[in-house]
Length: 112
Length: 114
Image (spheres, rainbow over the protein chains, first blue to last red):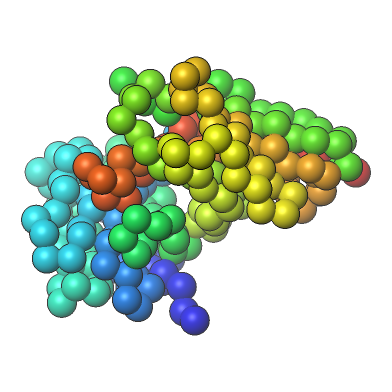
């Protein structure tokens, strides 16, 4: 079956512009997560959606970051007024409750 | 505050030998631990996991050991193969309190030499 997909695979944007990153989780997975990996760093948790519960936004680095999950499936991560420090690989993952998360290939964001 | 730590940024092993990757954690509330493998330009790939009620889980060449008293887990790969060369991340979660949200270590780059 299909895994987690993300689009675009690469995004180059100018400082100050807004970007939207998309994630299509594995069908039937109730949980969806966003992480990011900055150059030379580990994976940093950003936000977590579980079913209809309020999302866990504790990892979002600033109020320029937001995410939504429509219809319990597709998710969009939005970064407003991008800064150079936002450059990273943004990874989406999904899981069934209590099981391992499966990751997409990531979106490489470069802010110039 | 780094709750999950992988203190070795890199490890080099000869093909056929055992690779041992280590991970330490500080939060005793973690109840589920995982290992992921990551190649450049790809997302992490799930390898193996262990619940806090166990001390060992084996899957083929991969075995994960958990020592709760020491807050330490390790991944053993035996025999190591050149295709195992990648960055390995350990991760921890509190399934019952925080769902599957993962806290990752910094990663260890494994190089298996033929």
